[in-house]
Amino acid sequence: MENQLNNEEELALDKDSEENTSSENERVNKSSIDKTTDLEKFSLSKAADDKSKILSRCERLFMRYGIKSVTMDDVSRELGISKKTLYQFFENKEDLVYQITVHHFDCQNLAVEQILKEAKTAIDEMFGIANWMNAMSKNINPSLIFDLRKYHPASWNVFINHRNTEVYNSIKNNLERGVREGIYREDLNVEIITRIYIARVEMFIDNEIFPYDKFPPEKTFNVFIDYHIRGIATPKGIKLLEKIKSQKHGI
Picture 1 (cartoon, rainbow, N blue to C red):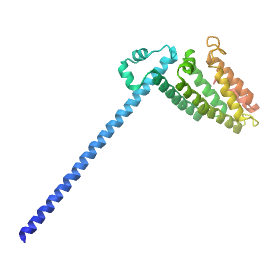
Picture 2 (picture 1 turned 45 degrees about the horizontal axis):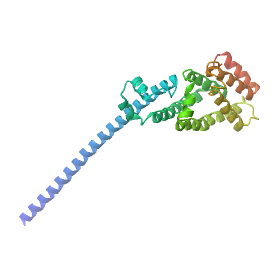
Picture 3 (picture 1 turned 135 degrees about the vertical axis):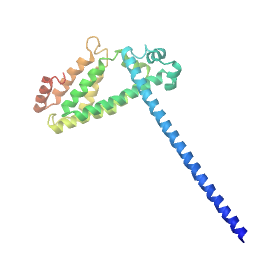
Picture 4 (picture 1 turned 120 degrees about the vertical axis):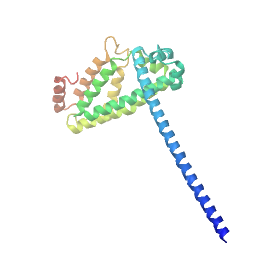
């Protein structure tokens, strides 16, 4: 009887020991998994940051020289990396151009969002966006839009989608805000004027209508903004427009 009790106690102790060892192993394994996950997150974050920097530098390169004239060899030399490393990020030049286009408009959306937050009125919004676009357009090679449209249809579709969504909504919201503030006329047909605005902006990227050497975008767009606001503003809005211009906030 005594031997039986001793055996049962030994079995219970062995079972407790196995359970404790199993729990400890689970904690060790979970700790390892957590560390691996943290390392993976760090690596992914660093890779995303590196890729964003590469995209920004490549964008500046294409803006300066156009798209067609820049090769992947040029890109790798500009970045100071091998083509093998470059192809770890992008399948080919088409993929590079596409990702640059997406990255460009993502950054543009953030910039415009910040302008809208800081603008005191709808007219301030328009001048804020105009000033930002003027700064951007100074560094654009005239052939860039042509190259994008002719040789990179997938990237061009990104441009079209951006125009038909973000740009459209931004202008539509601006018109509605101006009406609420009493600086744009109440009788405006917001839908039509939004589309007219977008169509007119398209003219400035047409080198045949506005040759870049004679009509640089930073000048023609300023004239257009003044023309646009005067056509939709109330007397109160015109006074505000003149005040903003006198402060050299815009054109």
